[in-house]
Length: 109
Image (cartoon, rainbow, N blue to C red):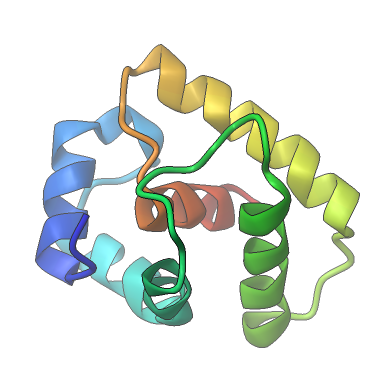
């Protein structure tokens, strides 16, 4: 998935159940709050989140949180939450593209 705000907005319009809002302005703000998600994804060798190995996506999500907010989440909390988000993506039959996946996680924490 290309890491442009337009593609992210299109993804969430296609799968509106993943976020509480699909308002374009809200999506742009979410995208702008965590701009490093795109840089992270470019360094990966995989196209989608591997729900059988959530270590990488959990570490990156925690790093993004650390850079944006004061919080008390631990890696175990993030990994458990990532497992739940995998199930949500499965329920709505959405591809587990990294940037939308991470944005859904961050928006729900």
